[in-house]
Length: 243
Image 1: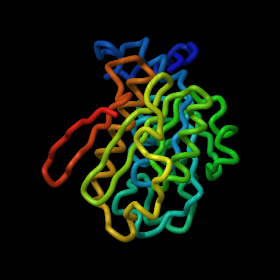
Image 2: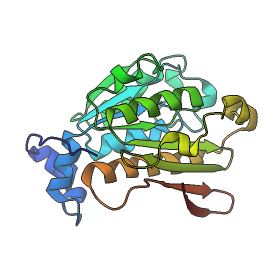
Image 3: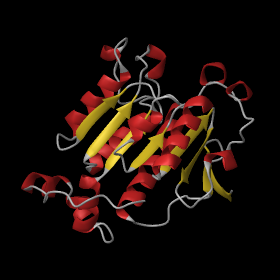
């Protein structure tokens, strides 16, 4: 990905807040400055978006965009842990904003409407990286197409029942259609409402998505470009395949 521009120096409060990053070999001040300068868009503030938003805000991403149009329902709270019972019926985007702002006041938060094929290009403009945790192929294709057009990496996660996966689509690597054929349709995929989802599974995959974003931003490690990491929660087993 393109490196974020240099940001302002860390304040004394930020230095204390990010102390465990600053002493971490390979991260240090350079990595934390990259996080502070980064502009990241999270599409979806539900099961996967919740841990993504929590950990990216906690890590000190400078600008955090949240694209979500849904409202909080009681059945969400078993896995969408940044929302609360008091927020039922209110917007997830606003709830996510309030959570992130309370966790880290140094993060600038921008809210976006529902992403569609018609507005995705405009909504992704100005961001360095996008993470997609939505649950339908129409939105995921629109986000992937816009990310590819903008030349920015896309961290993509998915969950179903007891299993999940995460991968990265980036310039120069395999595209979205290499993993999800054009002929695939939402009708071919099981819905969360119909088959259920184990709550902590979304935490596992969402946290891995946040990890991939931080790796991309700071140039630490090897991102999952052209690789899919899968997790079987029943067998407590990770595996990987290339595509």
